[in-house]
Amino acid sequence: MNRVEERLRDAFGAAAKTLRPESVGVLRERLRPKRLPRMAPLAAAAAVAIVIIAASVITPLALTSGHQTRPRSTGAGRPSPAESASPPDSTLATVPMVVGMQVLQATTVLEAVPLDVTIVYQRSTAVAPGTVRAQTLAGGTRVPFGTAITLTASVPVSSASAAPVVSGAPGTRMVSSSDLAVTITIPASWTLTPYNGGEAYDGASGWVELDAMVGGYGLQYACSVRATGNVLHPFGLHPQITYRNVGGRPGCLILPSSDAVFEARRNGGPSFQLAAALVPYQEPLSGGSLYLIISADPGHIAAIADSAQLHQ
Image (cartoon, rainbow, N blue to C red; front, side):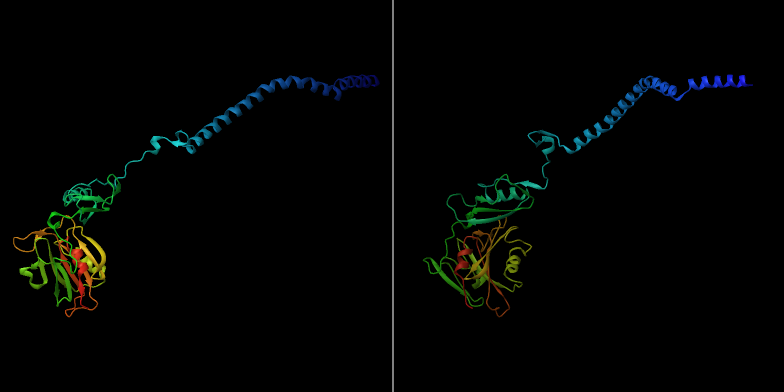
């Protein structure tokens, strides 16, 4: 048995020597260089795949972001013509040039745009009577429809011969109305208008008529009602109202627009348009009237209004 045990011990001893830890360590060292070359291609391929995936995601995002935030331009920081071009504004109208036209023609052209036309008459020997001398909106200007435009024109033929009326001047005379508490100066050649009695005068160069109105709500309201309140539009569709002194008191002048009708003051007499002046009384008249009304042709209205002397 001792021999058997010795043989077994010797056999197990030889096996233990081949599997000692030192031999295992050497085996691991020998195997490591062989495994690493096999894993390197796999790791490199994985790294390349990650880079490709990242590039495929980030690059489109960057390009898309740049396209949205950077405007397309033609250079020097200016937007392209397609971006800067804008459609014309359909709410704007082009103002025609009407200087040199007759008032009626100019008004027809401007109201067709349409614009709100007002005519101001001034005496002038530089242009023919009834000719537009100036306009407040230059030709070619773009403005909203219905914008107001004022034309300055020479006095029409019908009243071009009217002479200025100055109180006490040669060729003039003073007439009074006790009922209306006023005295005015008119051309000496004017006579009573037959159908209007002692309140109206006319002649070859013009006419004048005196009246009064109850009024109310102040001077501006009274002037506006007088100018536009009549459905027959005796001052035309676009009369001009100017606030100024009448007989030394605050009042207004109403001048007709070019479309106002011309009427004769007597049968067979000359035809004139209608103009007027309003001035408030200091105290109401016996009938309750608050405003004196002086109606006349456009060529004489301002001078007659300046000559007015109210008796209260």
